[in-house]
Length: 261
Length: 283
Image (tube, rainbow over all chains, first blue to last red; front, side):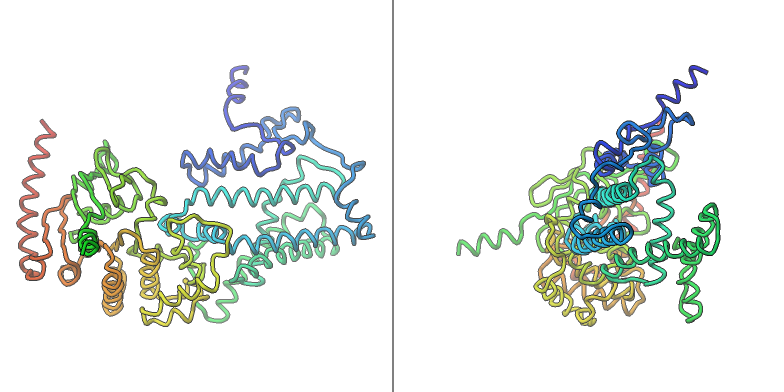
């Protein structure tokens, strides 16, 4: 028993992830450098990434994921960004949340819209499209993947900070299931707008998030229990995935084989 | 006069030197393949070398080694413009090497527009910054580079590359490979997947682009006729070795029959070579 325990102790992993120290960005960069250096396959990279966040045992004492050394951080007495913005704008409650979130969304949209059109941003986008070509054009795809992951995790960290300040507390479980929701939002956005240009792609991400939340709210108002939310999400994702194909079938266009996914 | 002389010597100067290039895949297993068995090759500025050989002769491997997709075995050396670049990774070698792949899908990014693809190509080997990837002056350059193709692509700069045909994509690949004036242009059976008429068209475009800038280039092909018609030197490969070498003077007078005979002779000798090699290893 003892031996077993010890083995588990030494089994994994990279360093202790600690959201509080430096938000997501640096920690994930480090993980990705390690993963990329040894040329791991994507599935392995993904394992390393996710396993870093997995609780080491069922015992709550051994949660690997902590915020300032605790499982939950209360921010009710702190002065948050929302408080400051509220003083400045003279708003309170829900209108204030909408105003701040909207402003942040607009700023992020503008920054991303600029960045993805720069030379570095273009190399980043091309890396997602055709790695052979990008290397052939003299751009290091590993670096590009690092930039992309750093950027997205930085955004995630910022979003987490906003949510935390808005609801008045942070919890280690806050991010659970978030990736599925994000994926659903992006897929819905793509299905709705079928974007081609950068600006439209970005806009469809935002719009997809909005639409997803709208659907969820509708479902809840219609009397579905919160426990059924997962079902709603998966049904939504399936519909959104199928929508472009159904549309093509109706127009008698060529439908790519399923291997695309 | 002095200038003329230096120009002259420059045009004949060595561009790329390959010394004892070997490549073994899956070494030490039953699948061991000796793809390249000691290739030595001097490529001079302005050379247009056609490489011919049967499947598995090592033609593509040779181009991949030059482009840096994988390094050669220890002992081999690749020297570009006097600098040893044997162990540089592909993305660093790319500054010297322009490439057109066999499949149109590999050379271009399908979800990016034509101008974005060209912008990627323009910055080959340069530091990428936070400036705009596509601006007005660049757009003009792209238009000028596409006009000679005569395909009307210069009017469709914002179209996604995925909407182009295979031939158009391959022509675009060609422009992208030469846009930043690399030291050498590598063409890896770039017309193999096209229909005969498109292939002919792309081949003519290739010749035109190469002649225009007197670009140093290497073209791999299966087609003997093509290999004889284009280029000033010819290499025939068999089992990872350079078995026939034809210089600029002989190449003009050579016919397909001569080439086939030369190949058979060389291949026959090659088989003997191999049996010697095998018996040596078994001893």
